[in-house]
Image (cartoon, rainbow, N blue to C red; front, side, top):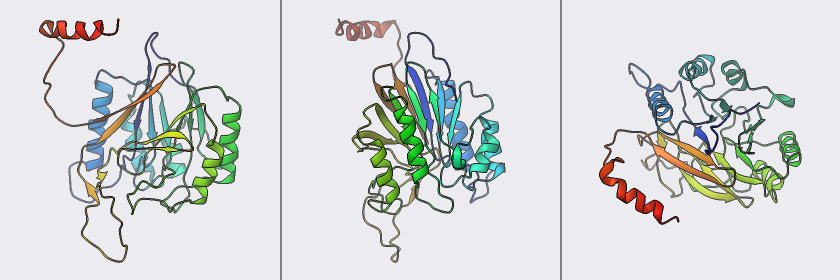
Length: 295
């Protein structure tokens, strides 16, 4: 797959939306909540000042992996002005994703992983961490060999990796993998010492999380669908304790900015708020003073 072209002289903006969960409709509404949140997030992203050069959908695009939900998603994205890079999550299906996004070409073994050559020398690797019927991640020997080969063919190219499942224990007990799961160890072995990898960005946990994996910065982007509650206390599966699990915190997306030298990630919640200041003539001296400090 090939990336889109960026405007000369400016950084590349890679938007990331994750865990949209189209098709989850537990109550009676004119439009399901997750579609409403997705519309609002798209409107903010595509109608604002920060128009992206590409949009990554990092898995759990749908809630059941069905063709109808994927079709609804593709319809909302039909006018997206930039390339779309979809990943498969544990709620998705490979067949459903391929039907909605025919630009994705299955690799050997049927895995939906691929490489995008982005502007300003950045290489993007999208991984497939799905194991059918499993909530947690997977990364088998075949996928490990594929990733190792992709990294080996461009060892000096700045690289950004997207995947659905974070290969870490974050402390949200009911969502976390077990420590040291074999798939995480296998991925660690491939990535250790790969200094060209600038960052790994994931979804799945429905919260913003920052850590490191194999010495590489790793970020989790919050969901478009309702967020997982912030509770880091252990959970006993046999003792319901009435803890919060899911909240109506606003949908969030990420913008990853690559200027050819450094990768910086920004996160914005989507909602209604007031603008308290604009760049008008009265504030021009303040802005000029800030620029003067750079000289």
